[in-house]
Length: 363
Length: 264
Image (cartoon, rainbow over all chains, first blue to last red; front, side, top):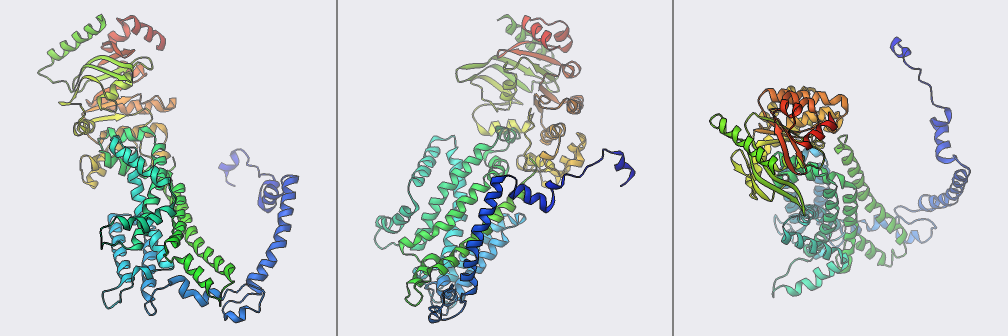
C-alpha cells in the first residue's frame, strides 16, 4: 500500500459468507431452510434421471451402424442420422448435384456471418445480399453453366428451411418498419391501410395464409400464369412476419421521447432523415429483444410449410421415419432436429445480446 | 386592453427608429394559438431585431415556452402571422424546414441524440441539412466544442457527460448550423445548481458576439446583465416589455409587480 491509500478510509474485506465458493453456495442454494430443501430435492431428481439418460444416449447407443444392428440394443440408435443424413438435409435434390445446395447454404451462412459486424452495414451489404440471392437461386434452380434444371418442387430439407426463413426475415423486417411508420403516419389513408393490413394479418393463423397462398391465390390468376410454390410460401411468410414486426417496431417508436423528434426537427432535418438517423436507430435498439422473439418464431414457423406439401427439414426427417427400416427411431431423429434448430436459434439470440451490448451508449 | 396597445406602440417606435439600420428578423403579428379549446396564446405582437437579446419570463403555464416553440414551428399557430427571416411560417413543410435550419433551439432537457457521439451530434445537421462535406463539418464541430470548452469529450456519448456539459454540447450543436437566431427554452432549469453558471457563461459569450437570442428563463441575473428587452407573459399574453432597468426597477403593470415580488 502506498502513502496515499493508507491515508484514506480503511477498506474492510466483506464477510466470508458473501464471497467465494462458500458465499455463492450459501446465497444461491442454502440461504433458507426451504431453499436448502429445494436444493436437495433437485439433486435427488438429477441423480435419478441423468444416469439412465446418459446410459441411453452414450453408453448403450450405436452411432454408425446398420438398422439391423440397432434392433439388438437398448440404447439410442443415433445411426439413423448418418444413414439418412443426405436425405434429411437435402431431401429430393437430385443425386450428383449435392454440391449445389451445399454451396448455396455455405454462401448464405457465410454472408450471415459476414453481416454480423456493424462496421460492414453499408449500402454495399444490401447489394451483396441481392447478388447472393441471385447466385443462390441460380445454384439451386440451375439451367445455366451446364447445371441441369431442378424444379423448386424438389427443393427440400435444410436449404429450403434456410431460404424461407432467412429471406423471409430479411424482407419482412424492413417491410415491418415501413408498416410501423405508416401506422403512425398523419395521413389518414396510409394510416388506415396499415392498420387494416396489420390487424387482418394478425387475425389469421400462418397456416391459413399458407393455404391461401397455395390454394386460393392461384384461382385468381389468369389462365396459364403460375407463380412458383416456394415463392408463394415465402411471400406468405413475409406478409405474416411483417405484421408482427410492425407492431414490435411501433412499440419502440412509441417509447421514443418527444424531445428526440423536436431536436431533430429544430435542426431542420426532414422526415426521412429524422427517422433514418435519429429515431429508428434508437427505437430499433429498444426493440431488439422482442424483434429477436419474432424472428425466432418466423424461423421455426417455416416448418409449417409441410401442410402445403413443401418438404422442409422437419418433413424430410418425418419421411425418413416412415421408412420401415428406420421406423421407431423418432426420439433420436427429433432430438437431432431439435439440436439443429437450437443451434440456429441460439446463435441468433446470442448475437442479439452482443448487439445490444455494443449499442449501449450509457444512457 | 390598454397594456396590449402600449406594447404595439413601443414596437412600432423601435421599428421606425431603426428601420434603415435593420429589418426585424422575427415578426409576429396578431398571433393566436389554441390547444383544443384552450386559448394558450392571445394576440401576440412581437418584433425582434437582429442582434437583439430578449428574455421572456412569467409564471409557469403563461405560454412563454409555447411562444418560442411557435417561432420554429414545433407548435402550430392558428391565427396571425409569424415571419422569420423573410419566410412566413405556414403549412408548407419546405418553408418550415428552411426556418428551422436558420433558427437554433436549446431545450430544457438538452435532447441530445444518445446513440451518437458528441461530435456526431454536432455534425448531423450540417451534413444532412446543409450538405456540408463530412470533414469540414467535423472541423467546424471541433471549433464550436472548443468554444464551449468541451472539445476533449468529442468522442464520448451524451450519457457519459454531466448535465451542464450536455447543455453546452446542445448549444454547440445549434451553433453548428450557423443560425440567425437562437431560442433558449429554460436552458438551466433541469441543471444542478453548480452547473448553471457554466451554461450561462456560454450564453453570455454568445450574446457578446452579437447573436440574436430569445431566452425563456428564470435567471433574473442573466436577464439584468444581458437582455436588451425583458418581456413578461401571463395567461397567454405579453403583459409588459421593457429594458431591464425599467422592467425590474419600475414595473408598470400590477401582474408584473406581483410576479417580481414573488421571485426576487
